[in-house]
Amino acid sequence: MTAEPKDPTKSIRLLRPTTPLAERETIREDSQIGLRVPRPGELLDGVYRIERELGRGAYGSVLLATDELLERSVALKFLHPLLTEEKQQRARFLTEARAMARVRHPNVVGIHSVGQRDGTPYLVMEYLPGPTLYHYLEQRSYRLSLDDAMGLFDQMCRGVEAIHDAGATHNDLKPSNMIIGPASRLGITDFGLAEWVRERRMRRGGTVGFLAPEIAMGDTVHEDLRTAADIYSLAVIAFILFTGRMPFAGDSPEQVLHEQLEERRLRPSEVRQGVPRALDEPLGRALEWNPAERMPRVSLLRSACADAVGTTRAATPVPRRVVVIEDDIVLHPWLEATLMSVLPSASVECFETATAALASVDEHHPSLIITDLRLPGMDGFEVVRQLRAREHTRYVPIVAITAAGTPEDWERLTTLGADGFLAKPFEASTLRAVVRRMLARER
Image (tube, rainbow, N blue to C red; front, side, top):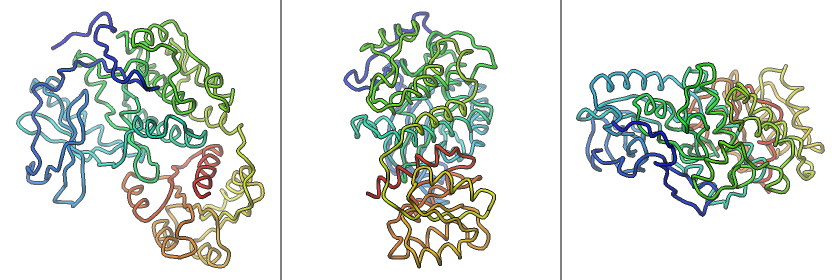
């Protein structure tokens, strides 16, 4: 076992200094020594046919495999032997991994099951095809619209909220631990593993700049403040999404860590033109050095950022027609008012049943369709299927909303042709951001 170093800068190495993210790993470069994984073509446990390696990270190796029993692709994560080298550690990890598997949320990459191969534990995870957020931002030169940035940030916050609600923490939130899948779905990976590493008294698999100061320094944090580190990391990622760079001016890991501890950071509105000043306050508070001074819940950070982005009005759109299918008529006035606030010249019509909505769509072509997933008679899946089968709605943006969505729901909707997915309850600012993003893509 390698003890935690007293000086956290001793184990830092700079990976990509020329990029705004410049992920600085604190795990040793030889961390993969001793890790043996199945080869392509091998059948594991009589179920999982190994296809290829997807990547390697601080905690182990991830392989793409086919679940031949359920006929689906899965990702197998093999943990480094140092994490579970003792029988007692393996048993406890498998128990805690099963607890992780109970977190079911569209923005958390699901864990299907756990297993062991030659004494090495592995996780069977949902396979979400797509680039990591790190590469997604690189491909776009770190220049996202405010609505795109808010859409991604909203999703990651909701995923972290689900993790916290389950009594867990992530402790290693960073762009390379997030995947952007079809229909811009963001999925968080590796939750729970960083906590396991810390309890094993190994070097952290975290990244300087994204790690909260108390985690980087190895401070003891009160149980009531254990989620504050995730809030700090989310704020760093939000800063990158909205501005295209880190909230710290330093070029080296040592400089970044020094600025974190000295509470020296940039303001988002001063870094990029067009970023509302209203973002400065919530992100600044979430980046406080003292965890007790940050907002206590992720939902407060998410709502404050959404409200700040909502104060920036996009260009006035051309007149449009929006169709909403929602069986809860109590929500109709709220949905109409929210949509009219971003599309003041649009015609917004709410329907209680899918049958009535589809009949209206056939008569008057829409520019955007929002449908609840759980509907009487005809559910949202069938609505999306029928809309995509019609010539005049084949390419119209469709957003599905639900209070009980799962990763499987999102995958099915994406296959059917939906463009977006919102989990209830959501704020008006979140809906406005999604609508603006969908219509901007349409143009």
